[in-house]
Length: 174
Ligand code: ADP
Image (tube, rainbow, N blue to C red; front, side, top):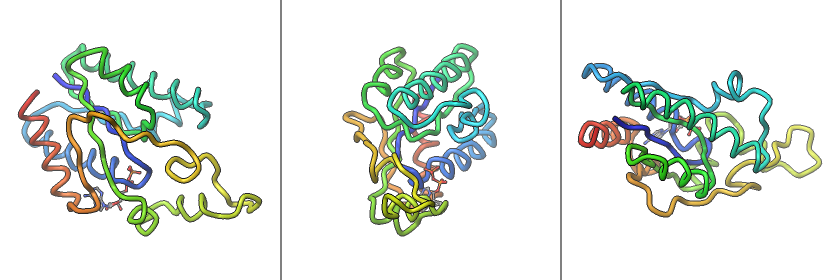
């Protein structure tokens, strides 16, 4: 059984890959749950913001859900930015079944891609009313993972290729 923790900047492709991989795994009869950070911020993690402490608390809660699913033999993918090495390490060191997958995309491509218009807003001047502050990769920290178990290069691969590489990784070691 596996608990996959994604890490990657906004727009890197976490949601896209998680959803495509989910379809592929379900088609093979493998049970899989996607723990989507954006969804959980509306429910279990409601009220948490984007300070260091809140981001850490957010990941601890997602990790708690993932560990619970692991205990009941359901593979899950935590799909969140997950920017800090220390908190990723905390989860990955809690069990050999936790694997870290870096959804990697260069910042130039992300700014160009900008599917949610977030980068445009994060890059606005400080006093602009639409400005998003504390945006990871622009004016908040993103620590590259030191020793990820798998890296998906979404600036070079198609969504289909990235999702298939993840499915191959999961089916090989699950
Ligand atoms: P995130 O969940 O990381 O914020 P999204 O999945 O919402 O990112 O958006 C990623 C965008 O990048 C989508 O528009 C997707 O079509 C595009 N994209 C291009 N190449 C890839 C790839 N190899 N994997 C995933 N997404 C990709």
